[in-house]
Length: 357
Image 1: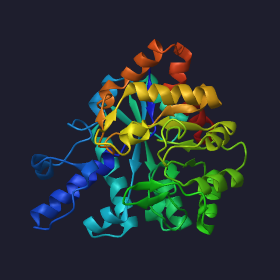
Image 2 (image 1 turned 180 degrees about the vertical axis):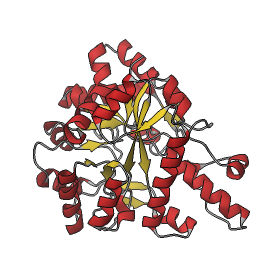
Image 3 (image 1 turned 120 degrees about the horizontal axis):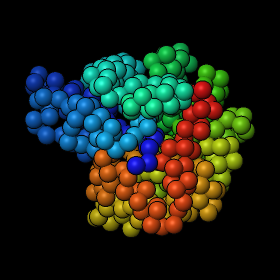
Image 4 (image 1 turned 60 degrees about the horizontal axis):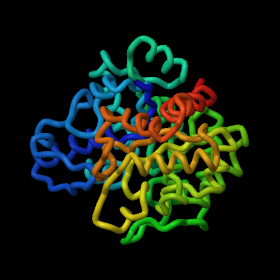
């Protein structure tokens, strides 16, 4: 069994979303149901647990599947904050509290970490590591003191945007038919301040969801030796989705020792699922992205970023318990054991060691 580092999931956001919607329902308040956070009436009534649930990811399956580290994405969107009737920063704090609570309840399985050294010790001792990350810095409002608070709360990797413009940067243009590539709008002044502060404090920049212009700004601003991660983005040359990385940005990412994580979402894997009715997420398509990126920039720039509990795909890798399917397919496709280990955990661990210590 190959150890796993998965750079992105939305499980904590799902658990908190379910809790807030359940509370609102009991108060007679109607709230919108995001399609990617669908839950049952029983779950709305009783809540969801990180230890064990019927969704993509839980602690028991992480342990059984040999996980080294699971990054837990915290996304405090305006919609989520409005649903909870709090400010976005207050909702971010609520997500942090919920994450701490759920991880503590699984202390026999999980260990929260902020350094690679902690990860290696915990894994050796039989625990699965979990690390807080931010998906979309919208809640931070462009304020460095909020970024510093996130660091104190254990966040060690953060993206600047989701699919919308915020105080620091732009995502790709969200239209009625999907995302359109944005090569024009770069980082905002607060965005430049953010990435410099992140570099100084030892927080990894995640460029997934950041538009092309902003990503180029980031690469030209950070030190050439500072590795950057795209937690859940594939190759745009293989699948035209705007959220995937074009060849020139993959090369720039690799040149500075960064890593991009294979995203399991069907519309980031194969062009035929972008506009069509099917939503199949197939391992064979993942292999095509891995093979393409290996040939373009080398195996050292590839990792895993499932986006579990944040995708509506029909998944061949149906949850964290089935993560070894990709290793088996890579082996059949001719990848060496060392290459498989690099994609599964060694490449990301290298970046964690370099930035987090």
